[in-house]
Length: 460
Image (tube, rainbow, N blue to C red; front, side, top):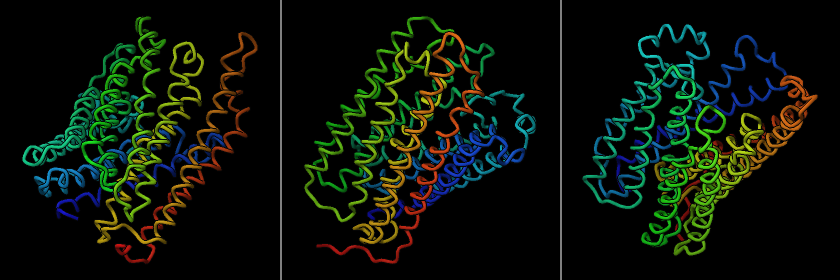
């Protein structure tokens, strides 16, 4: 490790992995409740479990991004982090606020939580993915500002690279677009219109810039390919991401009361959105093929290539399949949406978290050439179990969505009700739960790889 301040990334990574374990656990609870609606009721109702599941996902990704940034920025900028102390303080603020918010969801009725956090002074609660109390949102803004300040000062005072410029652009966008979480108009159409400014422009916009920067950093380290070559690929991918991602917000404006021209804009932009992810696949595999070094940390390169492929399948292919307006008329809000969401989040953001952790954590633990062969073998088992598990979950959700459409939405007459349709899908939900357990087993195997007793690989 070149700079001691990179060590501040370690607690961010550890906490992100802990949150991922909780996120998967609540996913399994939800999967069980789809089969047996009374499971854990009234202690953890379905709406609360879902709220915890989605909020844990968002927070763990933010922690992973912050840890990745604090690790790579000093190395890219060729100087120590501007304020390691600030990075440590913001970690504890964010961790405490996050834990207290999740406990609030679990222990206090949501209406009471809104009352005790004085949501009436500045109403922001009650919207999907943005259920956080207003006081929590303010805390997130403070943490984000401190984070961007710390990273920005480091970049300004040090060497500027394409990776840091792209990364900082994504981080600034993350902070700016979150401010729309404080805007809650009374008009429902207007509310949904601007709600997507946070949700879509995070996930399918600025987060992809952060993903591209992290992926490029790891590829440089494990392949030894010339930085100039990687920079050209990164520019191309990011340009297409911004164009298709920003305009692609329109595929969320179907049938919600917005003008009809969004049907065309959203459909056309959505047809373009898979292309950046396809380029990412070509990018990762081309860099691996042209590598100039045979890095001992082979599992980090495996995660990098896996990120590109799974992101393309989940965010690119599955996203495109049901975001054309005539198709989306039938598919929106079905389990097909859930299939796309699960594989997209896992492929793009959870796997890039594993990529940077698998590269950086051994170095922070005194193993500059990566973990030993036994640890990497165990991690590879975890990789495949999680990939197979999530592909199985996605396939089951896709089948469930098709059944839902055929029974509930497609027929002009004799369509089943929502609950009658759900009863027909229960066998598919059982399959999904099984693959969810496989995913959890994969995570446990991955975590176990940290504790394999083995010294670092010696140089050849």
